[in-house]
Image (spheres, rainbow, N blue to C red):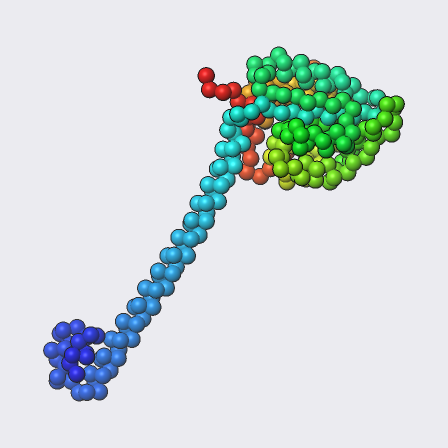
Length: 280
């Protein structure tokens, strides 16, 4: 019997064990066994809790790493030219679409990093032109000049004479942007009441710019030309937006506060440059 008790009792108690009654000895052994079992169970609970906490911390670390990767990719210098798709539509001929695209091209050509930007301009864009250009040209920026409403964008039809505009819902336009494998980084809707559409667009693209109200033709042209000039000089998205608003105001135009920049969650427009020159 003493050999059996030795697995559970301290030596001091074992020396006194022969003097104990058998029932008392059994109770001592049973109590020691229960205590040992309780300690083992407590240790197992603590180990499981520690393992669960480690898993949670690992998931958090992985998520933070993914966010940092996304931001790093947005900020990283681009090894290819910034491709800008310029779409214009004025089926009734009441907007100076050609003038706007000419001003944008001139602004880019006079910029320091003009060789890092490629423009694809369509002054009489139809929906087919838009849909063909998305997978073919793979634009980083989609720029639309024309008429719009809070939930509509108006393209042209494939007609030579002045004609009624082609209505496209904001949802259909956003779904077309989302459909391509290589999605744009920025959509700029240089058209009236288009700021309402930017909320849906940033589900797909990091940045979207729209107009919060009706904007004059000269205001829109001034904003667009200065925006691409700043982008071509290596300014951030936010910097280009703010200096373009300032350009409208400094030209004595009333619509400087109409262009509205909207960003996807977790993206910093002040830290994102769409044109970065290669290392010297």
